[in-house]
Amino acid sequence: MIEHEYKFRVTYPDTDIMGTMHHANYVKYYEAARWELFRSIGVSYNSVEEAGVMCPVIRMNFRFIKATRYDEQLTVITTLRTVKGVRIWFDYKLYNEQNELINEAETELAFVGKDNWKPCAAPDFLLKAIHANSKI
Image (cartoon, rainbow, N blue to C red; front, side, top):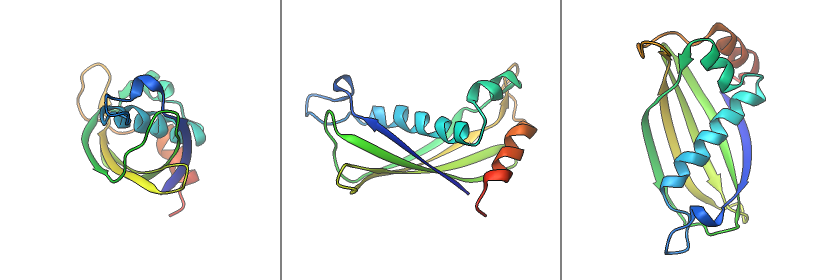
């Protein structure tokens, strides 16, 4: 298990007519938080792709608890829960400026070959970085 904190501010284009962050944008911010977690352990997503591996999302689950508005600073706590076989799981907790939980999510990604999109093992350097930084 690896945790990483990522902060961002809700931008005006990410809000909807109700003045809240549109639900589709949670995906974008969670993706950024996920790759920043990797970067924090010394692995860029670009290096994974250069190794011939891609990581498509194969499942997402969200729980919307409270709305958030333009210009609010939010904090995502991303947890790399586990890697098993050709899959990797992440959990997310999103907090507002008052440190209230406003959203929870989980994603499941698969490791696939860049050229053939067939399931494959994660690159060794990624697994080594995960193991070296894991708190389990």
